[in-house]
Image (cartoon, rainbow, N blue to C red):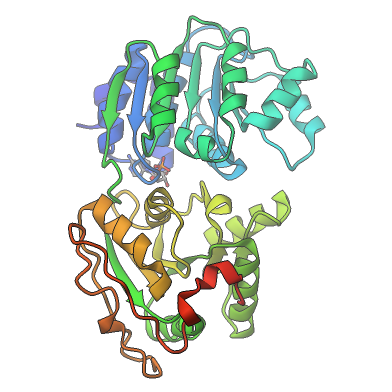
Length: 413
Ligand code: AMP
């Protein structure tokens, strides 16, 4: 199948060429014809599958007909980064059309957004809080919305946006097309989808399992040696762009500082940074100013940088969803990538969870050029295949004492 099969407006086909897409990804193949028909869609797909274009292209097609400068499509995103990424996709795919998109999210000047809305746009890409804020000021008219997209619905739920989403839906015409995208389908998300979708077609791509272009490996390491292992790895591995995840904003900040001291071209990306500083970090990563970005989960949502060679989970993610999202940052579409996860003994329950859910055993590796100081990585996480009962792990001497979790004691980066 190719893009011509969708019979899109020639101006949109020109945008696809500009974006450099040659063939549709599986989710685009499945979803675009259904969305073009006007049906509601429940899309179960993670970032990295091409899901943004899967809804943007048919929306652009719809908007090439009918009124201009009236808000006819609303895309709701959990984070500013994802909203910005979607907005950029619309700009590039819709470059040859007259369709305009406006972003609406917090942390930046509200008046500019209101001015952009006044100038007129057909698409709003918004985060829930600022959208409701501007609506309550009377500066957005949502009465003509024909298509609603809820993107990364599971993440919005995790971030506590569910009540806001319900409020937003009440502001929209009942007669509309709704496209609902989520990487996972926990109970509350399923319930929300059931209440707002009308006879939806379900499109499911690679539920939960990360893109198969990614090779995963687990590096057992005592908590206290993580930083040294990372330094050894960066020194001895051929990498391109590297995205490192930490559990907390503070740890992202400190680790970026320590890498900077080692003369790496690195930036942090975490929620305490201003929107401008975050954008500078993402842009710098994209345009090659930085080789390494040290990010937290929330701040990293929607980083649209295509050729990330390595994702390193410096800290184990809290949830399986976070694991698949992080890993989804590498190996995008037709590229391959490597994902390394540092696992200290306290992380064994999460390792088991991930393996059970992904129904696969992640390869354990020892980094040959690293002095483990007597720690035997090959003895950690052994035999914990997904279907086996839990085993108690022994704690290394330099790990946590008395079995007390390091996590509970707070981190020292
Ligand atoms: P998404 O899952 O929407 O975040 O898309 C992931 C990445 O794939 C983005 O960098 C897109 O620009 C890119 N992409 C989307 N569709 C295609 C396609 N058909 N061919 C190549 N790259 C694509």
